[in-house]
Image (cartoon, rainbow, N blue to C red; front, side, top):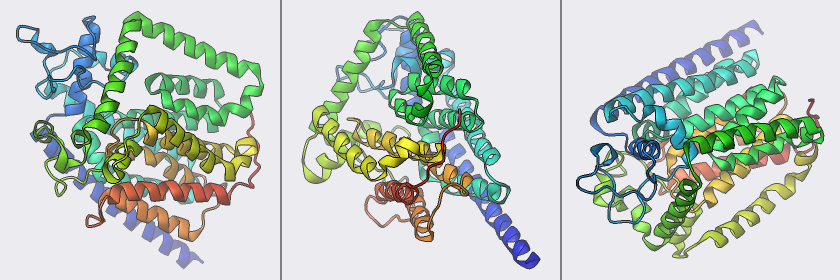
Length: 427
């Protein structure tokens, strides 16, 4: 028995060393691209934050000769009615402390910040996991996520999804530690930054039988909304939703603008991200794009809403008992799948820098293996899906999208296999 234990312990250490090495090599690659390229998506948000601070529309402003150079974005496409800023004013408020930084300082600061948040996410799941799975938490996080093409793209583009992932992990961590008031506060902040995270109210529904929790959550919301209008006005929000509508139309009418790397306009291809698919595997996994690109069917808002509702019924009906009496772990997994389904139905491009969000359900399952039954073939499917998302199946067309759908289906099967769990949530 001791020999078996020692063998398993040594194997875990070997896998961990390999994961650390792989993650380190990925870090070197990220540093190389940060040195050579600009963080384009981050640049849009910084420009938007500067416009917001200057009381100009972050979404409709078009730079003209003679305007202040700090509002100029060299990668902006200025022959459109809206500019490239697509995040809500709440995110621009978050970015405003960086608004006075030059582009080079911003991209390096944001990269360091992103890696710090990645470390926080891993650490919190490490704290939640049982002793025998702590090595697995670190190994999976470093190898399949920090060593992935999606994370490399996330760092190089200066994306925000690690912020959302780390906040969601804090919500779950505080929930598990029964610090419900604090958990609700962080969730309110997360929804303020990205509204689809309102879906994660699902795990709190059993607690809302007590009015005090509803009151606390509404209070957090009032504070955040009130604080928002200290820095923004109603017109900023109208411009934001108008810009989203215009970009949604563009994805259908001019799908090549939002397609994979080989179809990007030359101006966008030369900016930092992607020159060809051999350099970075890029997939746009939004349903709107997939229907347009593969089936030549244009989906607009009502079509996508109907598709989401259909998917929601198919997703939830077989596991509806989980909603009524599922454990916290299962409710968070269910909320995550609904959130991803909603993301897929949003009329906007969805590239694989979003993939880092899948760290949440995978590490949750690992950290909760005593409460969640996972069959061997489901672990295998997870490993294949993660490997495809990493870009290890380069010769399979749209392998990254297929890998994400495989992960989605596998987590759903895990939920179905655990639907009889009736562990009650304790307030």
